[in-house]
Length: 347
Image 1 (cartoon, rainbow, N blue to C red):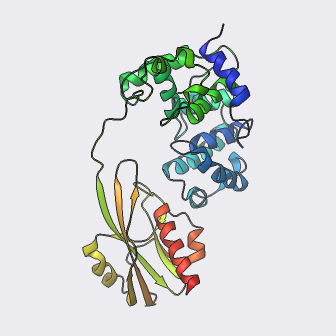
Image 2 (image 1 turned 45 degrees about the horizontal axis):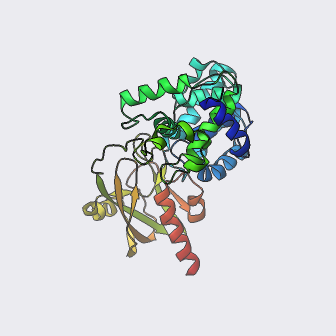
Image 3 (image 1 turned 90 degrees about the horizontal axis):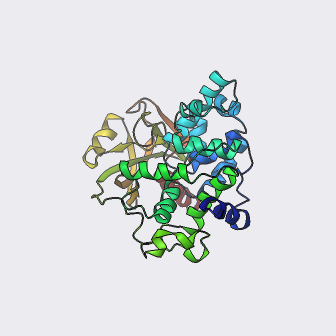
């Protein structure tokens, strides 16, 4: 019978992606790719994945690393809780499962950072288990194909999509089908300008046949995005820059960052830290967009006549600019340091 699943499987074999570096690899590498791919495009993930695997080729190597080393490899990929949870989970796997990724679905679900869909994807792709996935791309494919209205993040809508995901599962070729769903969402049934002419299930797609492709799934209800402002203090002495470690919780948890203050607190911070300033330069302000808010960043460069005898907070380090760029730093700090590096070379 020419079912939804069989058509996707046939399409994937001919047109789907077959050269992704984690395809056909171990459960560890599939797990890593699934975590990296959460809210991140494949093209962005691939170089991070390759560098990560080069440094941490297996679970034992990842568990033996420090959080600092792991976050340095994650730097720039965003959503840093993913990297911290990956590291915690690796240590739990060594402790509880002798360093082997667990096959039992319920045990996989107990690992930090792994939810139902991610656990199912690992089980289906690594061991061909019959498990349904429901990530953002799959929600869109099923909402359009089955004509499910409403925002897919709403509890009732999501519950209905899970029911459909379970019902549409094939009896065999589950790994191919799972990859097909992912590829369909990424390559054909895209959020904008979907390629319906190339879709293997276009004949009975409810959204296409009722001319509701652009309307389904319904967008997330709009809310005003909160906006915040902060000042980054770039404290520089010669070729060295001062960074301080962020608290473990909150944005950029555990990463190295330039000191952040409210604009009116700039002078007080410098006085308390015994800073002798030889030059102050306002750098170009910019905005960094998070999922739930916008952060307006005003970087100010302070070139110091000498290093202070004491520093405002514990957990601060002085690093050569090149070494700082190799540390676990968030994207906005990397952007600023690269600008400083360019200026330094030009000078």
